[in-house]
Length: 277
Image (cartoon, rainbow, N blue to C red; front, side, top):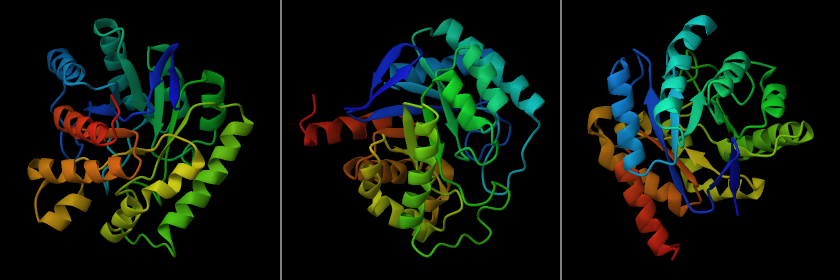
């Protein structure tokens, strides 16, 4: 049984849940620039919660392939007002913040965030693990090879599943030695992986259940779908649902998505299949 302590609220992820993506960036690969003002942000948050999202994940820095980072000050300027806005209007919502900076994590939690989602698994900011231990919030630890700017230039592994498994074992030991209780692992689909690497990880997802942590996957409208189906992010919803369903059948507990309604439909069908009420 997996329960995450989200600011005193226990979020049960024993059965799968959905994390809705709210990007407040001008340049994210699918929804960049869509949510720039308070009205649009609140409307989208309300829609995702009404459709069944258990978590809203707010990101203020684009990490698409080839993207170049922004300053910490700019990230805070984009992010913190939105965290406060969601917390004010939807005080029962569980807010996650997508950041790899420890100082941003601190400010976000102070502003009402309950989960930190780090694409770098602590690699981009060596203070992140100690910060998570101090904050005592659930931590999503993703695997990335390289940086967003370089990660898709030539990703190479001898055995992608075993290399990620070793990576997570090492990182989890460090976190648990610091007293971090709630860890979530994310294989990082598309983050320094070829299409073949991504599907190998999808097929072997249950391997990561040995780590005894909830598994999060984020494949929503990504190139691993578009390159197989010869489509675009705008037309990748059906492919996304297919991959999400496979991931659920292979042990995923959290789906990070742009489209909450369709992800919840996949969850409900898999729950029925597994006879989970």
